Structures are given as structure tokens and as C-alpha cells.
Image (cartoon, rainbow, N blue to C red; front, side, top):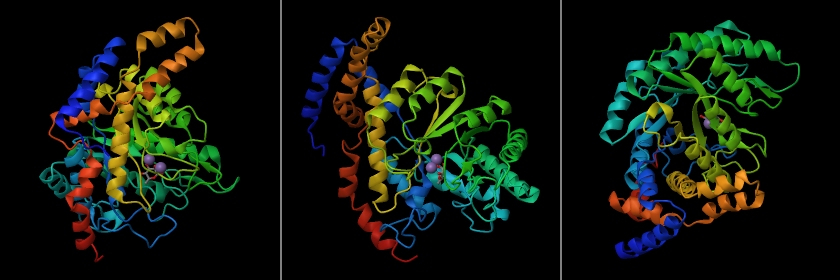
Length: 415
Ligand code: RM4
Ligand code: MN
Ligand code: MN
């Protein structure tokens, strides 16, 4: 818990600044980059989705509709200054609740206007491929009618994205199979490729599409877009307005995710992240400031992606988590904190030294250089950045003190 006076923050900042200067790192530059860091929050973390195994259980205060989700996102942004955009799901977040096939693009104007009113914007837009009638596949389905429905749904979503949001469509398909032999693997992949081609060619020209992959769930035997090679292959075949989004929870254990990042950057592929923590399995938990997240940020920094002054060269960053038991707003604030800390650590790597050790094959000394940055307490950088913006030093503590939770617990009892 951080409870520092202005003077204490200045002292800590100066001390760290002197340490970093010895490595040739300018603390003010790191602070400015941290000041500019933003990440999207997911609408779904605030609402009913995420009961998981305890389907009837909802943490107190869960939002009852999309507007309440935006209210919650607004307080997160107010406290962190780092989450001005909310990622939405078409099919869950429709302002006019109605049947899936009748979703109206225009009705999202209301949501865009409401977002503006509470100081937010709509961020990435997710079509929802796992609603009615897709239990045997959506874009991969053998049934052409099902594919058509989901192509139409994708185009409605793309239109919402371009008209009322940032134009970025993020696509995750639940398509796959439970048993070997259930579907023909090539047919399923071809159906997806053709469906995506149709979506890509008909979506607004200003729009972008990021394709997400996942090794498992709901498919137990196979998923059609199972890994980065399938996703990037599809994206490449579509064109330069298609790319890949990496969800941290979607890999087998032990996969080197920063290597995937490096490869996508090397390929000049559009990229993005769905941040979360996976322990034993994919469970969309809050982000912790782990060594892995630090290494990923280090790649995003050295690859010239994060914070690039040309926004088209930067990636898209989204928190994708869905709390089951824990307080939703605490969980999101915790993730924002962890990501900010990890980014700051990635900015204090002694790159010259690292380069020298790499050139001279000093394996452990190179590794220690990275570890040294990871072990640096970078919080003074973050505190200073927040203080300058008039934000609370500790957003979670400020949230606990704010009384907002008590208010939503009370107001949202009826559902
Ligand atoms: C999926 C995938 C999608 C997310 C849904 C809720 O596993 O991660 O990105 O939107 O879950
Ligand atoms: Mn995801
Ligand atoms: Mn996921």
C-alpha cells in the first residue's frame, strides 16, 4: 500500500534517477512513457459473464447492463488515467437488447455517446461467435447457413467498430472439435479462411482485424485457430489490415511468448495483446507483474512497438480477464498496476550492457542484466507520473476509500 507524501515521492524518484543515470537511463524519459501508457479494459469483466463453475454466483455489485459496465470502467479510468477505452462484445453489450440476428449498428451510437459522457471511448470490438447455433462451429461450420449468419454478425460488428469505435475488430472463434474424426481438419480450416476472406473484403476500408488463437477450449481435441502460425497465416493471406492478437492464457505451458512477439514484429504483422494470467489452465485471471510479462514488455520496447509515435506501428493492448469470485474492480485495477509496473521495468534495462554481453557470449551476465531490471523497484517512476497527472498514487487504495463499491452493492442488488 502506498501512502507517501510529495516529498517522499520526490526523494525516492531522485534516488532511483541517480541509480538509473549510472546505466545511462534517463528517468524522466521513462516516466513520460509511463504517463502515456494506456490499456483497454474489457466490458465483460464487470458484468454477469464469469460465474464459471458457480454459475449462479456473482460478486456483489456486478453490472446489470452495458451502461453500468461503462460506469465501472469510468471509475477505473478516473483512478488510473490509463484506461480510456473499453473493449466490447457485440451480442452481450447491445444497448437495445434483442435477438442476435437483429442487432442494429445504429443502436451503438447510444453506447458511444454514453461512453463519451463518462469520459470513455469504445475500443476493440469483439463479434461473439459462441452464441446461439454455433455449437457445431461458427465460421468453420459445415452448414453454410450458420457460416452466413456469423459472417453477417462479423460485418455488423465491423461496422460498429468503424463507425463508433477505433475500427479494430478482434476475432476469437470457439470453433473446433471434441473428438478425433468429428470434423475434417482441412475442411474446417478452409471454411474459416473463406469466411474471413469474405468478412475482410466486405468490412469498412478503414477497419482492421486481429485474429486470436487458442490451443484449447471449448474444443478438447482441436481448435481451428489453434496457434500463432494458423492465425498469422490467415492474417497474411488476407492483407495488411489483418494481424494477430496474442492472449496470454491460450498457449500450452512453457511456450516462449516473447519469442512470438519478436517474430510478429519481425514480420511487420499488426499485433495486439489480451493480457491476463493463466496458472494451471486458461482462466482469465488478473495480471501479476511476473518475469514473463516483463520479458514481453521488454520485447515490445526493444521492438519499437509500444509507445511508437506513429500509432499505426503500435500494437493494441487489452486486458482480457473475467473474474469469478474476486471483486471485479479490484481485479482490473490490479491488472493495470501490474502492466504499468512491468512496462516500467522494461524501460530500465541497461541495453548497452546487455548488447555487450550478448556479443561476447556472456550468457549468465546477459541474463543477470535482464534480471537486474526486473528486480528494480520502479514504483517511484509510476508514483511520480501519477502525481503529476493529479491521480491517486495507489488506485486500489483510492478505490477502497471511494465508497463506490458500497454504492453499487446497494444499488445493484435487484437483477
Ligand atoms: C475467449 C477469448 C476471447 C474472449 C472470450 C471471453 O477465451 O479469450 O478473447 O473474448 O474468451
Ligand atoms: Mn482473449
Ligand atoms: Mn481467453
